[in-house]
Amino acid sequence: AAAPMFRRVALIGLGLIAGSMSLAMRESGLAGRVVGYARSDETRDVAREIGLVDEVTDSAAEAVAGADLVVLAVPVGAMGAVAAEIAPHLAPGAILTDVGSVKQSVIEAVAPHIPAGVHFIPGHPLAGTEHSGPRSGFAGLFRNRWWLLTPLPDSDPAAVARLSDLVRALGANVETMEPAHHDLVLAVTSHAPHLIAYTMVGVADHLRRVTDDEVIKYSAAGFRDFTRIAASDPTMWRDVFLHNREATLDILGRFAEELFVLQRAIRMGDGQHLHDYFTRTRAIRRGII
Ligand code: NAD
Image 1 (spheres, rainbow, N blue to C red):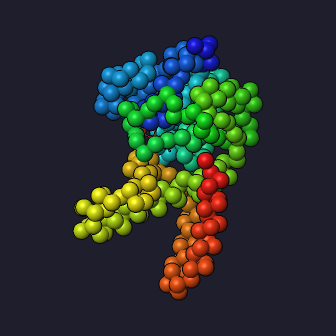
Image 2 (cartoon, protein in one colour):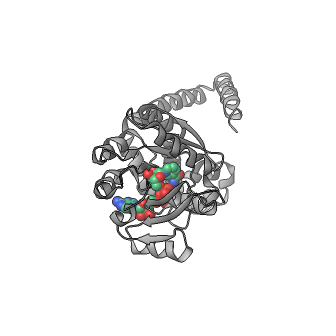
Image 3 (spheres, rainbow, N blue to C red):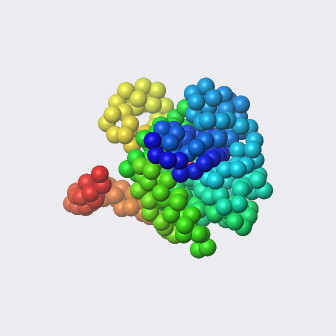
């Protein structure tokens, strides 16, 4: 096992991402002690039962006391409130990061609460599954995935380097990015696709006659692959769209235009257009491993 990189790590929220971080850090001895805060009795009970963290607490203040790394791993819309709650209890010199799927709004909500001397370095692991909650984590979640950091202009480079080292030790590749750019890129690669998957399930639901039976039975024809992500946590995704509003609206507008052009080609029987389009998109898609 590696020497611990942090003495005491506080995880605020114990879902998929925090749970996976804890399992990965404990497996490889990266943290002296991992303390997990969860709001609900149920989450705390599960965390204890499966030994997700070294210590479970119902007090966010207690969790962060003396921690040299604090990770906010709650839905994006809850980041500001938890930051306000823990701020007075943060240890000087601690690194505070978050794992939220949106960066600009989290920075706006969290940064004003953070006392001088605490290093706030926002982040986002591009790793996830459609599962959520304290039972869904696994140590390998971050392996060979990107983990984007969006440091603030005044972030301490040494603290950024220290967090980057941890992220690499979890198996991820680190890249730094401007928060606004992050939010636009993620709107294309993650947020809009989730919304479109949700609507596809909604469309199937309109055709109740079909959904009850045939859609499930024959889902391997595309529906199953395409809509896997529509099983994701509703609170998390509500917050993503409320907090990355401009970028997702921009991408959805472009998506609608694209869809209309294809719809028109189908109506007009323009096979050339469809074939050219699919040839181009196939080449792009095949370039993604
Ligand atoms: P999750 O639903 O598995 O866990 C979130 C946890 O936060 C739950 O235990 C929930 O009870 C708790 N919580 C919710 N509101 C809270 C509040 N107000 N105060 C305290 N605790 C609260 O979700 P997750 O997938 O671990 O997501 C956590 C964060 O990571 C989110 O910000 C999400 O955007 C981000 N993220 C998710 C994924 C993914 O694919 N699931 C990937 C990267 C980043």
